[in-house]
Length: 174
Image (tube, rainbow, N blue to C red; front, side, top):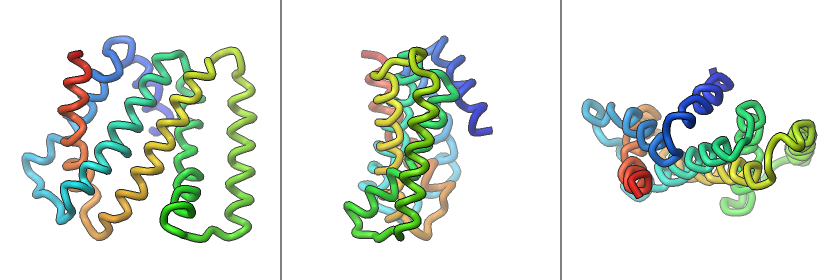
């Protein structure tokens, strides 16, 4: 299902500009706020999740794909959010990964680099950087979402989806 998502995005970007497409994505994802109470987290936390994990991740992703990054490579590059989350947690939350975990991150990064090189010439460096910014935004959002422990993931996702809808719509109009 995750991989199919990128094929659907590719077709969606043929019809909509990235900001407009992201607006529709989050407007639809926010519909449950009509029925689901706001989770017991601050508006600041919801704004952080909505801005980083949702708005930033998908705007960078959509622009990367619009810049010509193939859906398959995009899906692999965006998954670097996992290793980037570990690195950010170590830097900002003082979490400690084991030597084996760091080795695994290095192996995963080398694997992604090899995959990226295998499609060299099919994507610009700019598009790859945009996809990496998507992964970094998602990773930063993971750290913010972590502070919302114990709340319903469904409610948190719906309410955090509401917040980027308005700035994305404005950007789409501009």
